Length: 217
Length: 217
DNA sequence: TTAAAAATCACGGTTTACCGTTACGCATAA
DNA sequence: TTATGCGTAACGGTAAACCGTGATTTTTAA
Image 1: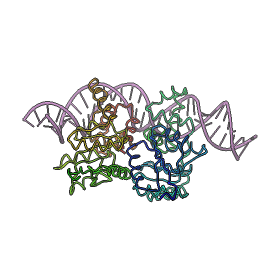
Image 2 (image 1 turned 135 degrees about the vertical axis):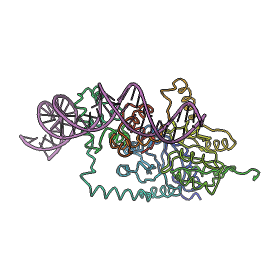
Image 3 (image 1 turned 180 degrees about the horizontal axis):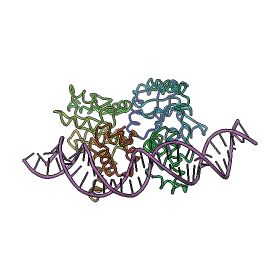
């Protein structure tokens, strides 16, 4: 023993029991050492100001700063660990973005303990790691985006549209929105109309759900 | 050793890594034995047709049959283990219902491994177990409901109301809902009205968000 | 069996959402 | 310079949501 340096891992997830669990799983691995953990995004960033690790296992949904924002913040810094995203089912649509901004691995939360270990060793060796189910999703989403460049292309929302969208999702009606933003009712209706067209939804319900799913509220 | 019978535990959660984690945590406990696990509600019910355990750690959100429904099903059967609910933040409003239908414990997913062990031993001894944060929620909701019997008490939704709610959250309008459920438009409007009153929201946006936050869609 | 809860429906009235279309000033990129 | 995108605004019409109230039947639980 003691021949190789152990892989240092930091775990960030707002569910402590999950952290404890992963720690317990990794404790059986001689090559891996859990050197820290965080319950939210701020803790992660703070921890890395005075510490380092080889690998960061990162949850996407966290109370304050979400996983995506954490990665983006790392990208501005000198030091960035190899990042493995730990996600639940419904966040899989984020795979692309997450890979694009620099995550090295992606694990669904329904993975096994062994897969975590494998993922850690893989990314630490400089490779990418994606669980099977994820890999399927990726190839699917790629083929989709090639076939369907125009339809499913999400025209980006303008700043103003986002503001209106958020207020709609806060159960504001048109008049209330117009008063909040100091614009006319007609303008708000135009924005709402354009939002529905861009996001391809039938009514405010669709808008609200979009806002919620995309963490705009 | 070997003086006492070990406590047999079954764990049900759709995130396998969480199961693996809890198993790893519990493996350090000599008095506790994890005898089975399930990734969804159906697996739980099936497992218990041919097996038993002292304690069942049960997630609320599962793909097919949710935790609530699992408990209700147990209530119709001969055998029921002591049930500890494992929930995330936003499901805490379900505490009351869950306790009423017979859960013995309630753990937030941000609890520690030690708390899980404590919870298992407590409910196994015939007592109830609630983590601190949960206990606060309970006392809060009780005091609220005493002061304010009509306003903040979350009256449970009826089956029909849930059906309507789901369709609203799928961007159906009233006519479409009435045709889907083979009832009159007036009835749908009544249900929607009652939903808004019960959930204390201003419009369909609030309903849709409630549905989404509670994984009804 | 009896009371309570749930599901059904009606109706008139008010407000809001939704739709299509047009248009103007402004900034910025081709 | 011209085209494009954005934010703003208007208008007339239709559809749908929202509100209050009351009432009947069916189902469920005490």
